[in-house]
Image (cartoon, rainbow, N blue to C red; front, side, top):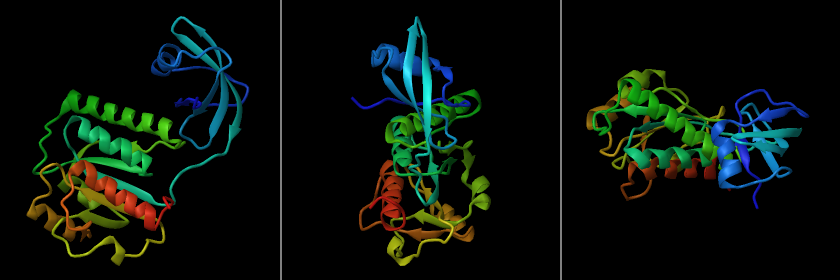
Length: 243
């Protein structure tokens, strides 16, 4: 059985006893049905991971004893920011989960002209917390020890002036491909993906004014939940650590 990995965002030190958060405790005790002595891996997002054992389960409280720290890292040499047009429900969840597996560093949800999702206030705050939870869980599953950030959603015009690094926007009508570019020395890449309806012509022009280059991935039009992941995989294959 694979050793469970648990994200615990607090100070962790060898020989310490820690109480797991409610969701993690439920997963360990009620879903996996582990018993005292079972091995665990804990990480707090600050680098490396901690070997631990399940110490006790008392009611809804689960405690683990930390044994030692391992300076183990799985981060990509690329620092990719994914600016993703917000899509509906499970499509956005899927994009975020797989982007984490492919090594993305920062995720910025964007509202654009053709975005079909309309959220604000508490509903938007709740959705952002949900997205960050998806990211945290994906790190537990894929072995990452540093947690990508899901930033507060912005409109495309608000965000464009803040973008940096090698700026790429996926456009099925572009004439350039990724193969025509060289890896940026600092590894910083910003990738912009439109929502389910794509970016409008005016938005594409605005991205170019902001320093973005239009690229395409082959002759087929990709869905929003596929597009960013395909580019991330290509970036990691040619410049990162995928191959």
